[in-house]
Amino acid sequence: MFVPVPTPEEMALWDAGAVAAGISEETLMESAARAAMDCLRDRARARGLCLPGASVLLVAGSGNNGGDAFCMARHLLDAGAGPVLVCTRAPEQYRGAASHWLHVAMTLGVPVFSSEAWQQGKAPVPASPDIVVDGLLGTGFRGTLREKEARLVEKINALSPRLLFSIDVPSGLDARTGLPSPSAVRAHVTVTFQAAKPGLLLPQAALFTGELHVRPIGMPRAVAQTNPPSFRTWLVPGQREDAGAPYVVPHGVSAHLPECFRQKRIPCTDGPAHKGDAGRVLVAGGCAAYTGAPTLSAWAALRAGAGLVTVAGPKPVLEVARLCQPALTMLSLEGNDAGEWQEADALSLAKAATGYGALVFGPGLGRNKGASDALAALLSAERRPPMVLDADALFALAGRPELLPRLRPCDVLTPHPGEAARERLFPSLKNPPSFLPGRCRSWP
Image (cartoon, rainbow, N blue to C red; front, side):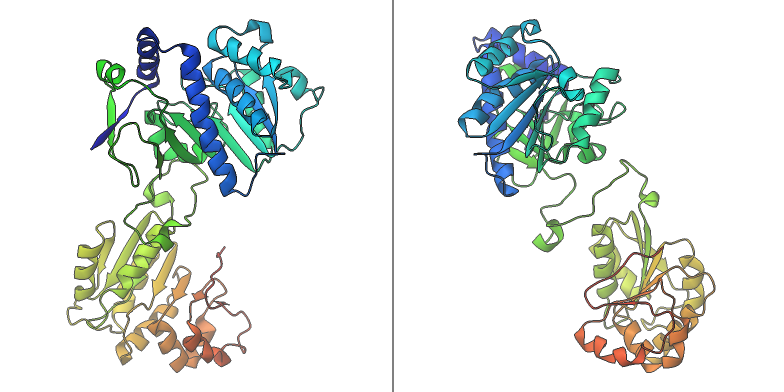
């Protein structure tokens, strides 16, 4: 099943259609605020935050996002938190539903200060709030941040709250392209309403949205059908086949992976990149008896964030890799169809490895003499990249202690406890490689 992905302009048509059908703008804003509060309460709890007693800073712009923040301030007050509103306009300058909910919040006792006073340090606003709610700019923003908004985005990012929560879209992010203009709030959590917008689903947006939650606000189905969206996407993992059901956008974490792979992943810190810029790893090993080990290691390299991963090995190994993981590239060892490593294989492997940032050698390698000779030749290669020596490569290394001086500080050994028992071989090295069971370290 597909779910809609409307552009900001199409979402505005949905809002207008709902108002024309008799749902007031105030009701839509209140529904959005309630959905946002449910999400904030849930994500705060996940971070060990209790709303009663929590200090909350809400930064509100001049549009509907500001109105959502005004509504949330009232709900936060009722929840026992200490909300403080910072507004980019004077209260009398707000119009429509935003004006209505701002005056409700003020009547109920929510403190309100100007953004200018906050930036100048003249407002009694918590310096280190527990929660910051970003309601500065909405999905209608496009172009380049004006100087005033850019300073506010910078100040929000400079805070270190336990939860930075953006309403609908991180301020400064273009909801059409997923790109900052030129900067944007870097939220821990973003809640967007009724449907995800195109830019929020793009990989480059994840750095700013953090967790992306989609929450319904009661938009009539007939309104959406009258104004069909330009884009659609498949149901994401965990989403029910109900276009109005809440869901979380996983930003590339597949539901088909084991849980241990989905719990943690290395975030992209520099925005979009070509796969060749995200790290190149060559995994070499395998034999006729152990065809799957290199593929498992290569899969781990992909999940760790490497952009391009290649498997090198005898023909039977590559046949398994092609079937198991289409994202991998293959490096065939010339003349090796028998399924066992030979000393001559190291020459072609060393030559190919110069274009990679790391070489993993040993998974499923086998324990014949040819594998041991291949390791010796590979360690002698002049321009080899940093190596991760694993499994049977460690067995070969332990059996040939004369090869130990060829290891470099940037090499990493990955023994399990039984293999680590051979550690007596290593104390004599002047510059030992990384050698910690269950750990690895970064190389220069």
